[in-house]
Structure formats: structure tokens, C-alpha cells
Length: 467
Image (cartoon, rainbow, N blue to C red):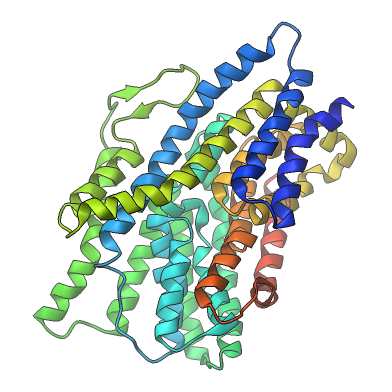
């Protein structure tokens, strides 16, 4: 009976979301209601339930404040640059242009803004080339292959904070299978090009693999040198600049000025983030000694400041800012509720109890439950934030119960949950809505099944080789 009560919040959340009939907000509210009796049966006798719930609400709100700030600031930044950057003239479809639109430009935009904006940019570019239907939608979804770094990584930061591990260490593990997956997406893209009637010559395949190798190498190596928040921007931005220059070198001063104008906001943001991270011991707000501090150089504050500076140069800046904040209220609220759910479940002991039972039931196979659980969490919740808030603490405890290194299960979950989020019900539904041609999510999944299969295989491989 106790185990059933402890499992009910997660089962309820997953069941409601998986049904497709309940939106994220009512689903997580229902899970929060079920988390109260789960916490009650899990707490030690000397801790009163009302005081526990109240304290964890305060702690959860503080933890959620940082990624919520990144979400709102990222939307402000997108509002500031969306009308001036990312627009491209229509051009005929070629294998190189498709590759740049999806696995370079799309991934770069996702790294900067997050929340599937990269797929939206990629789809708009593909449609400008005349590529439509399910192949275009599936190609656009490939742009979401670096979601752990998307929007400067609020979901990854939150997941690490919930389990009390350094985000940089978790992301070093995440980068390893994610880099290998990126290399496997080259052949997936070629398969999609064939479905769209576009041939990819052997020489072009070799060139594209060269670009993907560069991105993968930067993704892995930079985690030893730079803060993880900017690595997605750098790993995709540098190859993107070179690829665009090779595709259409500016021929005169006017062309160079246009190119630099499009690049400037992103270069400015990257520089500001790096300079902020270089400040030693910045002033910080730390209301809870055992939780991460909120420094004045935090990525959300820097991103927000850059966004406001860029917005100030735009006509109708107030309306743009209001629209961005309005769009951000709902995802920020859902993020707060996910964090609260994770705190009530994790700090009461319910999460640890579920992990112990799972590890005991699975025995030596327990580590191999991490990848399918992570994939399910991403597909169901639709965001890296939701996936990490819902199951990262469970995966962490499961890894510890199985005797794994502390960062392994969280790092692998962060990769797989994010990959699942990029092909989730919510995201594929959004892409089909943008296509507006009758394409169904199931058509996208049929085209992308090799990518989904590769995610699971890489997750199991990481658990076997790194455990």
C-alpha cells in the first residue's frame, strides 16, 4: 500500500500526459495532489507534514527561479532578434543547404533560445526551399538534438540542482552519448533527404560528417574549458559561420555588413556570458546554505540584460517585451510546479524508496532501466525541464542503489530525456501544426525511428561502458 501511494504521483503524471487528453498544467497539479499522501507515508515520524510541505515550497520556488528567469529572458532575446536575424532569402534546395538549416542553424538557434525554436527556424528555412510535408517536419526535428544545452541549459541546471550535483560534471557525461548521437544523425538526415527526393552525393556526405565531427569534438572537449551554458552556442556557432561562408562568401562591403549584422546579437550574448562567468566571487543571493547561490552574473540576468539592450533598439519594444513575457508565463508556471513536485517527492524519501524497490526488483539489470525511463519521461513531458524534474531524482537514486558513479545515471538521463523531448507528443504536434498540411505525428515518428533507436542503444552503451 505504501509503495503504491509513493508511485501514484509519477504514474498519474505520466498516465495523464500519455493519454493526450490532459495538458501539462492540470496533469502536474493532479500529480501534486497525489504527492501529499505520498510524502505523508514517506516522511520520518519526527517531521510534520504541513511544515515539510511549506518549507519545500519555499526551497522549490527558489530553485525554480533561476531556470524560470532563463526561460523569460530567452523569450525576450528571441523577440529582440527574431525580426532582424535568422531571416534568409529563399533558395533552391540542396543537400548542403538542408544540412545547414537543420544540423547547424537549427541547433545553433535552439542552443541560444531553447523551447523548440530551433525546429521552427529550421522548418521555415526548409519550406523556403520548397521542402514540405513529413520529410520537412522530420528534418526540422533534427535541430533539437542538443536540447540539454538549449536555451543555455535551464533544464540541465535544474536537474543537477535537484540532486545536488555540479551541473558541469553532469553535462560532461551528457556530452559523450550526445556527441555520438549527433554523428549518427548524418545518415538519418540523408534518409530524410531521399524521402524528399533530394540526392546527397558521396562527397557531400563526407563534408557533412566533417562538420558533425567538429561539432561533436567541441561539444565534448569544451566541457573541460568553458561553462556548459555557452558550449552549445560555441559548438554549433563556429562550424555554422564557416559553413555559411563557404556556401555564399560575401562579395562586397554591403554583403559583409549584412552578415555581421545578423551575427552581432549572438556574438554579443556569447561574449557577455563568458565575461560574466570570468568574474571571481560575484555578489550572490543565497537564502538556503545547502542550495546553489543566485549570483548577479547568473545566465538569466546576463541574458535578460542583453535582451533588453537589444530590444531598446527595436521599434515597438514594449509590445515585443509584453508578448514575450506573456508567452513565458505558462511554461514558467509549469516549471515551478514540476520543481515543487520533485522537491516533495525527493525530500520526503518517496523517490528514494521507489528507486530502492526498482533496483531490488531488477537486480543487475537495474542500470539498463535508466535509458527507457528517460526516453519515456522526455516523450511524455515534452521538455528537458519536465523530464528532469519528473524523473531525474528517481534516476539518480536508482543509479546509487545499483552502485553506479553518482553522475552517470543523471548524465545519461539528461541526454535521453532531452532526446525524447525533441520527438515528444507536444513538439511533434507543434511541428505538424506549423506544417498545416495534414501531416500527423506518427508520420514523423516513422521517419525518425532510427534516431529513437540510436538514443536507446547509446544510453545502454553508456551505462555498460561507464558504469
